[in-house]
Image (cartoon, rainbow, N blue to C red):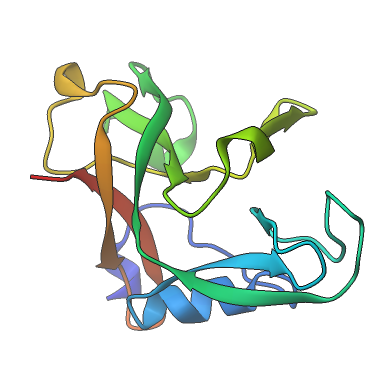
Length: 150
């Protein structure tokens, strides 16, 4: 099965392993600070808000709002060549406070990245309700995708 998946696979490390393990079980978890109760994504060793080191994984609903997206019209990196146009989206999970979203070093924090499925790229709209889709791309790896709530 892994030989059939043409894209790069995630390389979990000690910091992200809990996230990838939960996806494999078709659950979405986010890191949460036990001190200030703020969610953060991607995970980090310390809270970006208080900054405590007492972090845990907490399951969330898998529902959220399309925060922003881009349509790639010309894939230039190896496995993505010839698979365009495709979308890359950011979803704000329902449990995450919109005020906690921030941008640092060209990365947006506290939104979850993925691809939208079961929707035409032309029909994507910022603010639309989305729900998680768990795509078992290999026997060992599940990728998070999103679809519009019907």
